[in-house]
Image 1: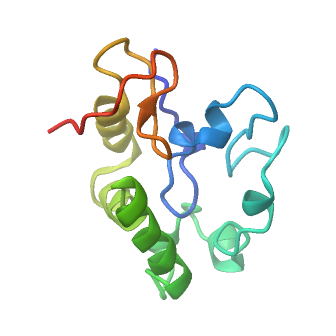
Image 2: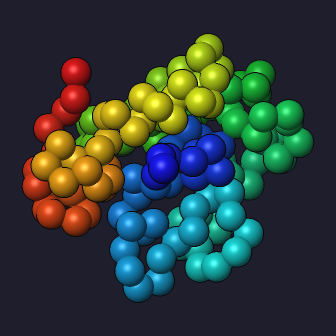
Length: 138
């Protein structure tokens, strides 16, 4: 069974399954799209998550917005590109062009530990299970 699920893809294109807040054991965040359980303050106060345009469009993603990518998404994307080698804008463009199923398959391949098969933490670039360092998959 795949560990990547559509409900864990945030409106901004972040894969919450890769987030250290989702992967931790105590006070585990349930993801941006979940209405159940604990959420981090950054998730609760997120300008993107709480954007009325996103909340009212058909997909629930930023790519449907006339302002895509907005300044807030560009700032977030830049930070994630530099610090974590991941682009939320590229994620959203891929989902829009290729669909969620193909995106999830790509994510599964990219972010699965080659040592033990667990999911890598994007924020630490380490496997959450065996602590192997992440090596980018081609």
